[in-house]
Length: 65
Image (tube, rainbow, N blue to C red; front, side, top):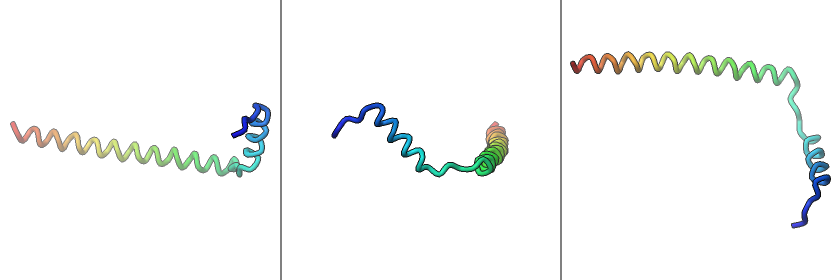
């Protein structure tokens, strides 16, 4: 395999990045908002699940006394 010079490598990288379809600012903002909303919903879900598990285990432990 032939070695590539640093300048040739940078030229190839530039050519490849020109082929990428970059998202628009609107698409990026919508995607970021969806991630934030989903993260908040999952945090709420896990907080509620944790609360139920905490009280469920406390109930089971208190029944054994």
